Amino acid sequence: MSEEAGVKDWAAVSIAGVGLIGGSFALALRKAGFTGKIIGVSSPETVRAALDLGVIEEALPLDEAAAQSDLIYLAQPIETILATLGELDAHVRPGTLITDAGSTKTAIVARAAKVITRGRFIGGHPMAGKETRGVQEAEAGLFRGRPYVLTSRDALLEQWVEKIGARIVILDAEEHDRLVALTSHLPQLISTALAATIGEEPAAAQVAGPAAIDLTRLALSPYEIWRDIFATNSDSIDAALGAFIKKLEHFRKILRNPAIEQEFAQAAASAQTLRRS
Image (tube, rainbow, N blue to C red; front, side, top):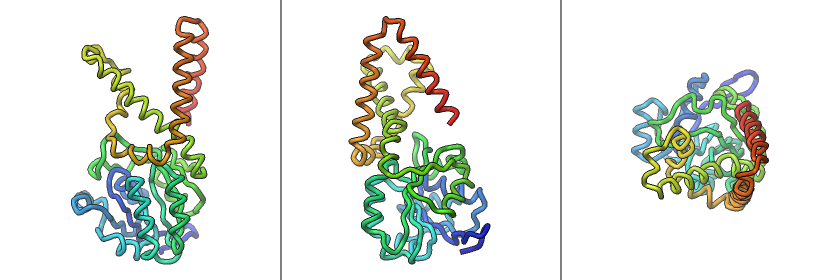
């Protein structure tokens, strides 16, 4: 490891899952001044593309990459992260930092606590993304200005998260899952349900304006991304859906009542708060 600001820096970083998030993390590190080696662990076609695009410098199997890395970044689907955690510990050097970018945290953190003994694990979740996937979509600025959740503290990891432009939020795994059910998983289901409802009226597309286009953007996300999220955060998502359905039913009751104006005012204030954050 090299020295930086009194903290030993990483000499080599391995990224397992060099797609949109993993590739963007690699590009962001490099743009922020990281001078160590960046290794990719992915399918043959993905690592070939990542090498061609200059996202990574070397492609290795997981065991070889883990053995020489100071940071291992798991940017795979949730079920794959859970499986990878079980394979990692035998190959890492003592003290190696392992983190992830999974969209739910409780199952991943619990799994890491059981199987990681030589390395150290910190759960992570960058609140950034696109509807499209793949290393070809990766960009260095993807995390800039976005919240980046960590489940515990680490000075060097936090230093680099800040360098790539993200805003650190420290949350335990359960609280993370409860909150993102409201701010991420519920919006996906709302968008999907809206697109499906509009699609049941064939004539609707000819009068669809920006509101319909904007609100159905998330419905373009592939189900493969969401399958593991629903499986590992179903209780929190169910609670969020229940709260949203209750609010919709309330709106339905007061649709012709002037009291709905106050709901609009409160919602506008909430929307402004989200944008300031």
